[in-house]
Image (tube, rainbow, N blue to C red; front, top):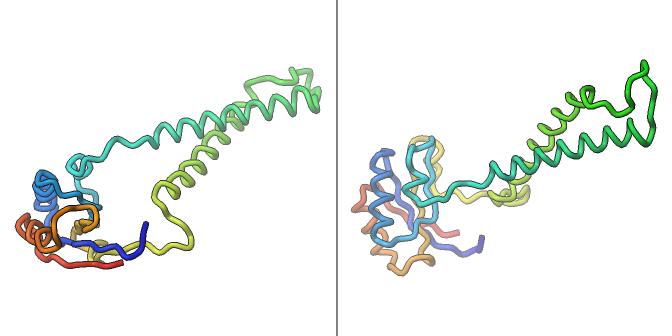
Length: 174
């Protein structure tokens, strides 16, 4: 994200008031940067207009990659590269490969999802997160509106947030 960003921040006491405020503010054409809450608020994603996530597709792709890689590696190593006769059994038999394949599928899916989450969330080890209000991790709901993404003035956005039920409205500069 760019530096020198200006936000108008509304602090809400109740999640029902927040949910109604999000719908009200979006109906007025205001672009909401983000809403921060100390706990999940049912229906907030729909009210903010978020699309359904594609993370399950990514998870499936990482898992199927792990499955294919595990089966290929075991088949290649035990069937062709270094075949061993163990008790007269086939060199590349599928049933003994199932536990390793399952574990490798879960491993690649988990690692892939962690890496995908960090990339999508823009979380880097050297980057400090923006905190609009410290009370958003305790008991307050915070709505951040980017001034550059909206055509309304700071005073108009402050009034709209106050009219929607915000207990206080602040300005935050990063």
